Amino acid sequence: MFRHYVNDMITYTGGAESSGFGSDMISNKISIEKPTLAFSGEERYLTKLWVSRKADELYDPSQDGFELSADNIDQHTIHDKMKTVLKMLVFREQQVLVQFWSPRVVGKHRLLTTIDQPFGLGLVNEELYSYRRDSEHKFYDVHKDHGTEDLSPPARVFRLGLPEWTSNITNYVPKDFPQKECAIRCNLNGYLALPVFNLTTGSRVGVIELLTSSKHPSYAYEVQQFQRALKTQNLTCDGPVSDVINEGRRNELEKIFSVLRIVCDYYRLSLAQTWAVSSLSTIASHEQVLRMSCNSFDSRCLGKVCMSTCGLPYYVKDLALWPFLEACMERHLDKFCGLVGRALLSLGSCYCEDVTKLSEEEYPLVHFARMHGLTGSFAIHLHSVETNDDYVLEFFLPSHMKDIKHVLNLVQLLKHYFEVASQFELGDKSFIEVVGPPMDLCVNIEPDTMDTFSDVQDIARTDFVDVPDECSSTSVSTASTEGGETSKPLEQGRKYKRASKNMVYVKATYGENSKGFWFSIPSGLWKLKNKVAKRFKLKRQMIRLKYWDEDNDLILFSSNDDLEFAKIASGNNNRINLICEGVRHRVD
Image (cartoon, rainbow, N blue to C red):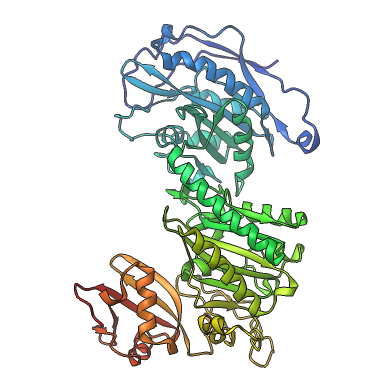
């Protein structure tokens, strides 16, 4: 049995007085409990923790200057819960340290400490325990009135209630991670700290901290481990959310699910899912800078605005597609690229007859689509009037729906059900961007549908599909010409142009807000004003549109000819930059 006695001088960090901590600190007798028998299944090959235990009963905290407040007394219960949590965890490597930080009231201070709190070691060695001993010497004042100077990751996590992580501790500067040098000496690289909440009351009870020798690019697996184990003890690492918000969002998502189910059953679609911009809900240290990031805990998402399907409605008719659905849940997409990103950026829709012919840059999930035989994909923007949230609905179409008429009919069905719901606005239905080979549009489209979707023909007959400036300039791996030939892949990083002059990408700015969408030049100025007004929720009669000419003067759009002049002035035949201004009196 491995035993260690803590007899060293306790050093207080955080700016408050020692308040009873120092040379008079009594020694804590701590022993390490050997893991129980290996779990069954795949977990038998993973690492369980040696978990700390006290050789004697818990000591009286009042002897060390702690007040016997309800807050401190409750820590006895939390101690036992966290010890149980540690015993349930399994990890991908052996060189891991997990420890719990808990707040205690000392005089007028609320100090975050790991002394006398449960911890676990993947291996019982001097490196891991050396870092543990160093942690026991640290105390951080997390009282709400105390400043934020000289804080460590556990203190930030407790104060903000947000997780913090990095794939490599060298990404921290010493002031943001006071134990950085100690971690490096102890061969520890990866880092993760999660806030722990009481699942019933929502109160913050502490921070659970993980350090590993590996530089994992993603900590999603470890986070799932903690979530599963904490839940068994009525604890969670997800922050509490208002019941009112939950109820409103729940009703909204149930309505979306209902429409997905109806559409999939009607058209015999194998899978439909919902995407939304992932909230910035974690703190990541990257290139020695602390920055907000999404909740993927994946290094690939750092510095990006991501879209995710996690927690959003989906409908699966073919259970063989579950692995694909799970891959989508695990993988975040860059907001500005791909079919889903295009639909969100344009507030419209995007269609590809065969996503398996696209590159990974254009469709990041192409490998999984090929594995599961998914080809046709249609994505359309959906806006919630009630919560002001934006979604993108993605439908995977079977082989019998390769005709454009089926896509148009699907849009009409979506329009019907979401207009009935009234709290939603479906994306721009007058235009569908087609990515990939040109489609055969020689079909008998119903007269009432032909006018609504006349713009489809313009983009479907283009040679190449270009990406707006907000996207990284990468090439589509397959692009077809009107003769049906497939061009060679274009060099990555090189922009490619649209052959047709009818379609342009419009970037409209109103005040501090900007919106982007595709527009057919022959539609004229009147329709352009309608589109701009709709996106900024303004009345068409109460706006003016202007563009900058070659002399950098703002020119008022007064006729359809100005659309061509604006293209020339932008220096890009596929783009128009315009300014939207509100006016007091009607302008038409």
